[in-house]
Image (cartoon, rainbow, N blue to C red; front, top):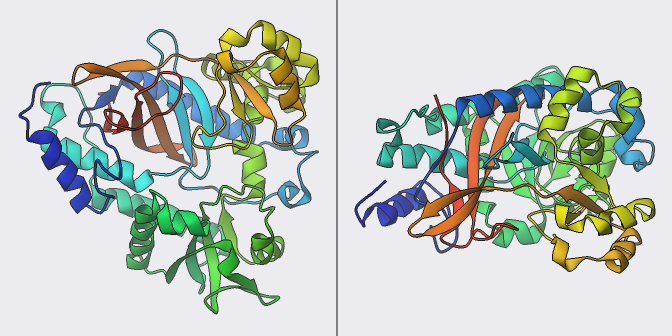
Length: 404
């Protein structure tokens, strides 16, 4: 689509005016869009429903949790409203789940990007595109999810605070700190007392979790210390053990849904009998989860012989940190990886779709936001590199729409 030279600067200025970090210098956004065909979204809808059924079953918990830390083994009812599934859409074949995140970043930024671009570029005029929800409607949806979660957990509204939690550095310098402020303001407008803080700011008085001496009832947890190992989490651990506070995500949801090692169970049929995965569920899982293996001493030789087929990810990594391409590993390095405390996952390489942008190509992915089985948001990213995520221009977050 040809546009006048002023479109990108005007688009970026509108995003910044809507509350995002300065675009593109502080936060990169691509002034083009991708459309996800309706049949692909139907496939993803079916997949997410199977994913939710499988990963919340008692059989699943029996198999995946025996070695989990004690804090993660107790069943918890929370369901993260900002859960997201990251897919690649290869040029040929079905969409492929790359990972599941129950503390995904960018839920409000994506809604802003999609709404502002749709209003300014009007892509539906030339393509079959479903209009994204307005920002006010999107905020209402998210606020309603929190209301539903709070009422299910407490039985009624709680008198405590809603606290957005992350580590101090992220709260001071992270790219998504502006989004935390948006969430705080949105929840405050919906009637909650709200705050933003880090784990070290919390205290436990034996009956209540406190932040700034005020009781906390509901924690939106953005920390990447997934199992709360740090001493800074002592107060939250106490409140969580006493079921005195709602926290999502939490160690239980991490070990049963978003730990990368779970991709092995989802991609391979070896444990289906114990997991009580039915043949139709297996068909859908196999179609959309690329072959994945936790790197172990007994599969090093196989993975080394097929290393060109895989990328290697740290089990507890995030944002692409620690990713190793096939050219960076051999049998000796794989054996060293088996001795690392964090561990690694080998995942079959999945091609990305290419998008031409201003004479260059970027490689796109898709992030699906869903709450309790219902898709409510789409976002995308475009990388300068095909083999890993690089969102510097001309890459960046990408307006993404459902096809009709």
